[in-house]
Length: 182
Image (cartoon, rainbow, N blue to C red; front, side, top):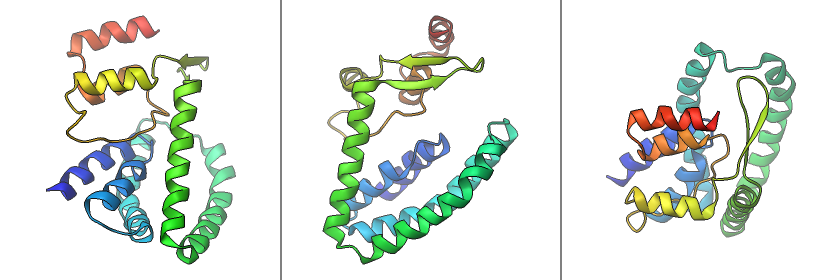
């Protein structure tokens, strides 16, 4: 049963481009008793079909900047090869600590600096209301806290998307929230 829940939640997060591995890897570590390399290996295999589905959707919605993709794809491949080389040679416990430290630092970054969003008009908007206290309060409202503790970063989510994901507002209220956020 946990595998199905893990798959659905991390798939949703992957589809939004946030990084399903932030959910999938810790879930596999704690709920399936795997070591870090096994969890990361499964994440890499899992990533292929979820990325393809999400990519098709983003291409259809014209959300792909081809100039940026061309610039970053090759160097990303080099970085992935180097990262995989080190990951399979590193002690599993040390790798786990690096992964946990990375998630911790990213979480702190989100808590203290807010989330930078670009609107369709190209202007920058800071979403300072997505902070730790609000996250905790909203998880409590959604009755998720205590049942499953998931540490996520909110990079890339607008307040509207985040609250839609947690089912916080009826549809009519979402439209009002969208207007208020500009």
